[in-house]
Image (cartoon, rainbow, N blue to C red; front, side, top):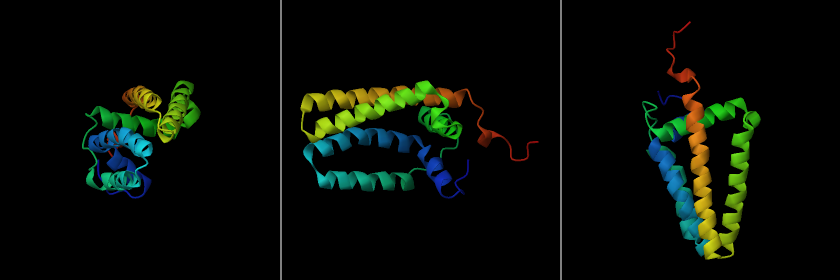
Length: 150
């Protein structure tokens, strides 16, 4: 896969890197902690880190990494439409509600609720990721086809 694309394609190409995916996953609990501690400097560092992440991540050469298949599955799902799978939409919606619960608990400095919410958010994230990897694995990726194919 080449990185000669621009705009949203360049974003996706770099985000497909396992480094990018795992870095963003690790940043979620740090973001919750930053909200809990009301640390503007940590939030600023996270923002910088998220932007820098896409510049240090290189597009993967293969889809061998599970994280790469997750991102490619997300692309397939988005191309089909957010409502193309009720189960995936429901999982994403529940995850969003749990994230809001978690951020509210962190803002109000409720340690048990924040910890439970963060844990639940990560579990839901990985359930969604697993669904996206499965979607990619059951869908032919047109990017892997030769350019001169009929």
